[in-house]
Amino acid sequence: MAVERKVLVVGGAGYIGSHVCKALAQDGWVPVVYDNLSNSRSWSVRWGPLEIGDIRDKDRLDAVLARHRPQGIMHFAGRIEVGESVQAPFDFYDVNVHGTLTLLDAATRAGIEALIFSSTAAAYGILETVPAPESHSCEPINPYGRSKLMAERMIADMGVATGMKWTNLRYFNASGADPDGEIGEAHRHETHLIPLAIEAALGRRPSFAVFGHDHPTPDGSCIRDFIHVLDLAEAHVLALKRLLDGGPSATFNLGSGAGASVLDVLKCLGDVAGLAVPTHWADPRIGDPPALVGDPSQAMAALSWAPRRSDLASIIGDAWSWHTSAFFTHSAFTG
View 1 (cartoon, rainbow, N blue to C red):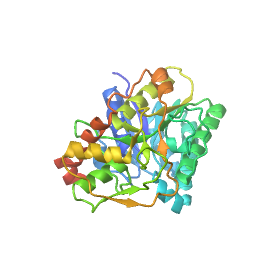
View 2: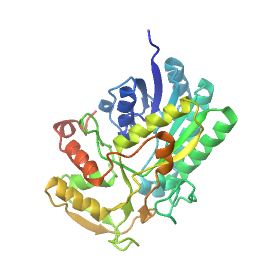
View 3: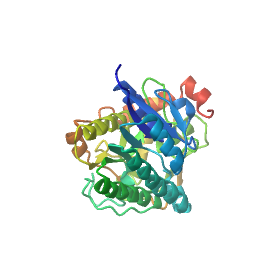
View 4: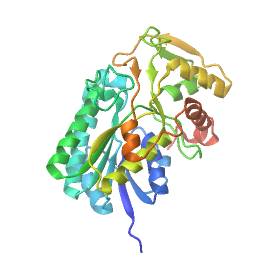
């Protein structure tokens, strides 16, 4: 009988984690989801067992790792709301830093071979070079970015001390949804640009806020690098296999390498949906850089990977299909 290849996916019930779980299962892995369901949905756990627990709970992590004995860990758990990090930094350091430290301690005791960390382009701060390479200086401008950068550095230090291999994946704006319609973005507290714009187009919220109209960009709105969640999921599976095959620890950008402004997104959504998106201008948010675009060439070379579905029309088309599906309408705010 073949031995099951297991991966512990911490935060695996969330938006990106659930898509990675599907990709892992398609590649022959058993994804064991560890999640406290604070900003995720139990129905998104479809490809392996669910273990409910908090990343800061050492005893619970020890028990789950002992029960399942995974070969590797993928770490998605954390607070992600940039604006809220400015207002409540303690919560972000508690979950993103303290939680990561607790997970690393448990992983070391369990003899985990490889760890993949869900990091962020917010680690860079204001970009001096666009698109930004991994060698760009890291001077994050909000507590969210600082907490993730601290976690990256802890992971690297623990790797030196213990020999555990790691990959930090700094991704840009995760977006889109599973084209099969099985899973998609359904946060309990939605903060992401595309789903918020879709909600406004559908009349589920009064209008969409465009934060700032005089940024130093061609149309005055912020520019972001949107990457399809399926492209992200594929890169995570490839990164894990690379480490288990003996590849070295590394940090990679995951993005499309191209930027689109907020107004570009609204226009594309209008074209896809055939509906105008009601909008209003709002003051720029503290901690929001005017442009975030990454250079993914190192990841493309090391992982033999390419962002194949990350054009704006595909991203928005898949997101629109998900948010207007019968399953989303019935299930997004339950379970």
